[in-house]
Length: 466
Image 1 (cartoon, helix red, strand yellow):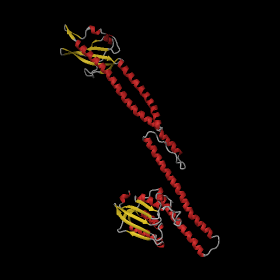
Image 2: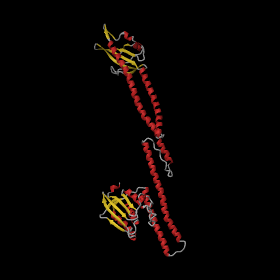
Image 3: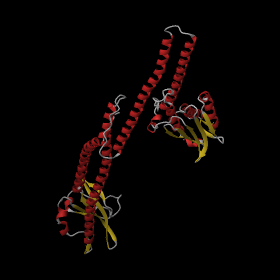
């Protein structure tokens, strides 16, 4: 099957629509001209009939149909451009009299046509317009008169008009096709720009953008939308490259430390205590590596696909107690005070695993960045039909210029000032993405040397998630 280009399809659709409109206009014009021509002929035939009916008279008992002078008139004697033919019949439809211009030809009486009705017929090879009228004299039917007029000139005019319209129609359509094709080609230039730009865009070349048309029409919106899409794709790929680079670096660091420690350890015999210290150090690095891998996998899951939310009843009080239990050793070792204010039982409809991940990361951060002997406050309360969880610490805090950056993967605020605090820089990034997925309000406030406060706003009902 022949596949037309988009430009040709536009032109074809245009000329088909225009062609139908031209056919309709030409049909109306032809009908009007034909009606006008036939009306003129019919009017002339009717006048001729009236004249002949008035001329019928009876003289000395003899019926005179027409004066001799009338037969001698030019229109009845010669075959003019549109001659008028007259013929009289008796009641038996036999010819009594006829106009001289009929010569050897006669007009045929048509029994299937009603009296006084105009109709088209033929006289020999010539098309004529004819009418049949009964003749009455003193109330008595004495015969018929047939009046006809040649349609040769009218047919020629109508045929010429039809031929001109057909030729004009084909010429107009052909001309319109090329005009429509030309303007369609100009109109779809932005589409060609989109195609050409798309061809040069690769994973390593995402800088190209589609030039925006000057007119703010649908193609302008299409080009702008595609450019915005390319911007988002470029940002996503850049984030992926950065994430891969950072992840490789973060994974390589503990592996390098473990390898270096083991290489030093096997260079010469050492006592059991030194072996235990080095092995214990390697185990901690492996634990750190495992935690990093788990967080990277969690990040990848949110980056690459939408997770199916497993909605169930989540008991927030129990989740917080479980997270604190996991951090008991750190809390006791660093003598951190935990203030838990839950005056009521708080339940929400959400994904239990993801909610645990959120609270575990936030509470773990609060404990990690609180100074020895510091304090962490955790409280629950209701506000504007939401369950609010507020987690505050009086730790090292976050600089104001870093508050937005802390949600970027692997970013760690104040890491150079506190190298003893280990971390991957993924916790808050994971929290941010999960809260967006579950539609949980998430706000963080912090000040250097004062501490950090995280506020979470949970929806109680499942419907609020969607």
